[in-house]
Structure formats: structure tokens, C-alpha cells
Image (cartoon, rainbow, N blue to C red):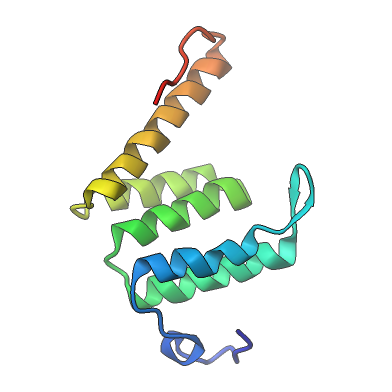
Length: 124
């Protein structure tokens, strides 16, 4: 994925469906240690997701993929929450609605943990 700065997304790589973007984005799962991701691989993942989003802007699946990248990879929780809200408004498929449900349950569980109410456990 070596591309010039003025290259169009289709000139970099043409994805045919959102799932292809997700599979390609897995390149970013390179761990330096148990708690630390490789930053170069993480940046590559961000670029892959940007290209996919430019090609398929109305994909709730890609919105959730980008939200997960922002949240888990970069720690940008507010930006991720905006992406999740956009995905909810886009008439998501059953699979994306389940992803939204799980993400909401995790947020609820984390909020309960921060407030000290550790008795609420998520059971999927």
C-alpha cells in the first residue's frame, strides 16, 4: 500500500465489500508486548479503513469497524461514539445491530465498573 499523497482511494486498492476491508485491517494486529500494539501496523490499519470508508461511505459495518479502531486502537472514545451513533442511523443489518448491542453492553459494564457497582456482569 505505497501510495502518493494525492492518490485516490481506488488507485490504492479497490475493495469490493466491507468485509474485505475488515480482513485487510487485521494487518494492524501486530503486538510488541502483551499490552502494546505496533504503531506502524496500527497506522496501516487506519489507512486501510480510510480507503474502505472512502469507497463505501454508507456502510454501517465500516462505521463500526472504524469506531472499534478509534476506540480500541487509538483510545479516541468520543470520536468512536460519534461513529457508532452514525452507524445506528444507517439502517444496519442484523449483524451490525448485534455489534452495536455488544458495544453498548461493554460501555454499560465499563460505566458500572467505574462507579463501583461491580455486581453487574455482562452475560452474552
